[in-house]
Length: 386
Ligand code: GLA
Image (tube, rainbow, N blue to C red):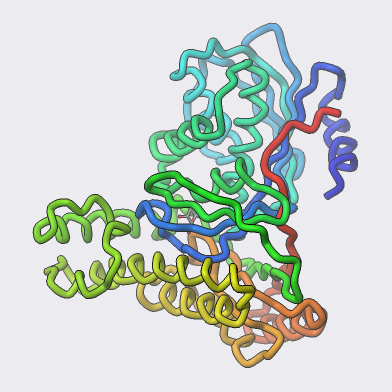
């Protein structure tokens, strides 16, 4: 969406004046490194040109009025009524207000409105885009000067303690640190990262939304987090110094471990292999070896589907129908899983025919219209007042 057009849309619900703070925060793609973030492993995301917008007008009392423009819903509460509401678009705001309060901020009221073009529950991280747009606006409004790492910490704390999702930092990091035409190679343990120039090449990213909705709260996401913790406990009995699965670099080390069951072993095996795929991907990317990048995407999908078991029949189908297409170098499901989208590395000159093929075959099989997006790698969250 054009930012100016969005501001006009917001202006129908909130008076825009000199005091208005308008923040935006992007969704993300993660080229590779699925489910490694909460295992303190490696990821390779980029922010995309799809955004959540959060506009705020100051108030002098303690009243907070929020309008979700796209849902056509409103809710009002006061700064001392920070209890769960039940709908995520309100609870994300409340959870973050609790975090600001915990960090010593004296809360004050405001009127706010939100709108977005990140498809919700699609695997492009709509939730974190919303959270990061709220964080960016409130950081300014409360005059906190929190750095992005502090904002990530607040969001993760809210997700764990208030929302109830034991998520990692991939999404918030991508949304806050995004840089146009660059992907970010992040080690979620040391928090060291570097930007890798993303070559504008012959290939582009096509995101295909299966339109099977997932939500990390009710899907098996938290189960995967506990299975990985369970795996670490078994590994510690043999290697006491291991802190998390990403400390293991070689799957041979897993052969000596007695896991609680075969499922837990498969989860551990996947994470170790996935971290290795991220390093291989980065090496291939630096050589402009897109063919190898594509093969790694397919291998990642295999692992997510069979070892980590977070895919679903619709996502597997989307990957399978493109496997024999010369114009598609690689494809994998992306995000929390159990629905959402696939990420596809596609030859730019063939995107139209690939899109047609996907639309037809997917509709024939599932009677669902998929949504297809060509995304660009963009800058991260910011205030867009002027
Ligand atoms: C969701 C979570 C992230 C990450 C991905 C899987 O998007 O919010 O923290 O775990 O799933 O890579």
